[in-house]
Image 1: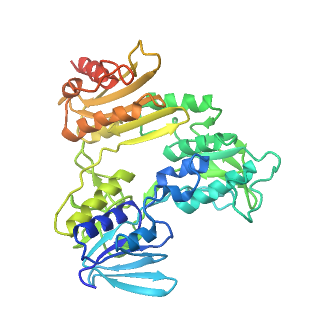
Image 2: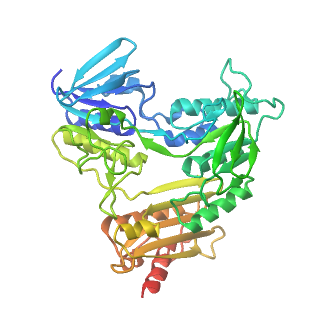
Length: 471
């Protein structure tokens, strides 16, 4: 095998890099090691699989292992865990069912992803405590919902009862964490009849969004009978062999199950053991081409840092599009066309029952000041469609800019589902990427037709109001 490009990790970044490298250099040997059985899957769809909107795990898979091997001619080795990287000898060591493999590399990509954070509280090892960081996690949670619903279409064979109350096994349950996974799983469980208690250490859900967006989402969660426990410091997941209650500093709530949605952290142990530098964020540090401190060793996806387009500094924002973009860029780079793959703005979206929300850039004023800006924000609520059109609602936008330069720094948007908060965030992302001012955004030529918009899009309204405030 000559000049092999070796990839550690078979999800978004890894398989994007492997596929692009093979397309650009068909004669190049590409070897991918993946310790699990699943590759190239959409983990973001797992809450909707648990909910039942997606019927099988296979629907979340973009390309099967067989397709990678047979159609794309990639040497994909599932069930192989890489346990060592030797940057001096330029080899990786992997362990599989057939034994140990030592694989030389010419270029290497570390795409080990992220893992769910398990908080340091008593009882997280009890039966009935779940995370949602992998396909196997999603399968287990779907089985729990199936047994609780007594639904044969959900059920897997040879599994026992999920909880104590067999006649009414739809709650109560606990969700610890009010971020993306926590909010999405609260919907998934409530939609299946569970009595959901959501526990958040801080005073609001979706803390990366604006206060107004967080309050809007929180109010809607309550309308959907999700019990919000804010400023709730969880001390213990109490019980015997199985979890029975969530204990906070102020209360004890009986539950049948707990989902931990307390965030993720980068998997960096392999890189650290190889002497590869980490950044201040705790993720793997790279240059603009995703090359690490070790020559010809790259890192991308949820294990690596990226450059924030607003601050120009390294940031850790693990999201699917970033992983795919940077993986593809590395595939081009290792085959002779150096490609950066672009920065990040921290753009994200979430659905909560009948509400959609999006955020991008820098919204927190303390974070903006640390980056050298003098932030100013304005929140407006505007119509999503022409007032005379028989459908429509409102979009609430918080827009933040630097007072001195008037450069747009970020935005948070929320609306009823289908009324455009998410797709309107794209205009702000473009503004962040090009360093646009509020006046620039105010003059964007956005599309208008009564079924889709008002003459003055809510983004333009927010820019006008913020511009006036700064004047």
